[in-house]
Length: 79
Image 1 (cartoon, rainbow, N blue to C red):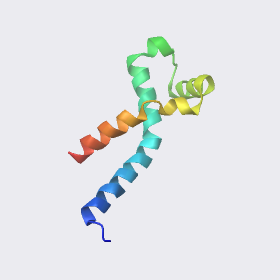
Image 2 (tube, rainbow, N blue to C red):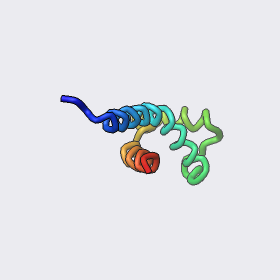
Image 3 (cartoon, rainbow, N blue to C red):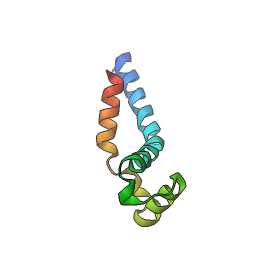
């Protein structure tokens, strides 16, 4: 069974985006919190934001909401 080259390219690009977002998403999450809702979180700077979030909620909390972000981001890139 032979797969279409377009499907292979689609799956390869989707996989690459997943790995890229695994690194990028925590930074984007903290950036948005610093810009929009820092009055709630009281972060002093980027380093303090990461330390506080990981200390209080664990590393897993840095990836809450990544699935809808991934779908939106990949759809945007696909268009």
